[in-house]
Amino acid sequence: SSCNPRIENGEATITAGGGTSPYEYNFGSGFSSSDTETGLAPGSYLATIRDSNGCTLVVNYTIVASPPLEAVIAEADIVNVSCNGAADGEVTVTIVTGASAFITYSLDGGTAQSSPSFTGLDAGPHSILVDNAIGCQVTVDFDITEPSQILLRGNAFNTSAPGASDGSIQIIVSGGSYPIDISWSNGRTDVVLAAGTVLTETGLIAGSYDIEATDVNGCQTTITRVVSDPSP
Image: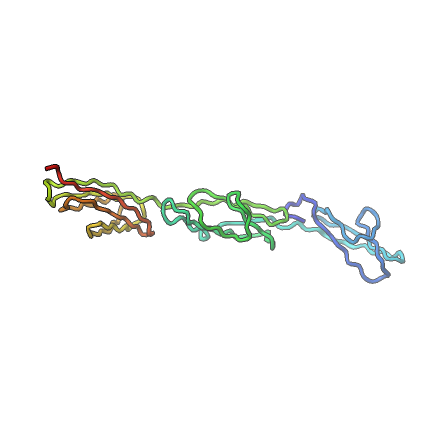
């Protein structure tokens, strides 16, 4: 029988031997040549076998309900998104009970597949429908998380006179996963250990400066600030 004990889709087949063939079978609605009874609910039943000499034998048989389908996603089977806004999350479903050789998995209402693993997931809530092809289904819900976005905020301060080298840039680092490496296009490097850190670069001539941040997960962001000379 299927996983639902109220569904009458069990089946019984009797293999007869001895006596004198051919045999007839009575599953409760009269003798016939069919040795198979279908549409059975879980429970105990009686059947009678009769050979060509009229000799009979009563047999007992039991239809057992398949175990309910149960599936879980362990925390260790979830790979969260590596960087804010990326779509590289992964998940694997584990079948606890009700397994069969024909289990399929579909993610968020998509196409069913035979593999219990999914990749290329973005952050947010997801669900996987598990189906074992005999009417048993279970839905497993899970969440993919993402780290916060790296934020670089900053201001450029112009030089005091054309050709002077007293311009400066000040930035504030937040978000991301620490430590965060900061690379300036003029060659300066910093390691930021906490959100809210303020970095100031002085002695700058007029020009465009790129500041790139790379956190511990390899996530990156870049800002550009321009130091200008005053009009002559």
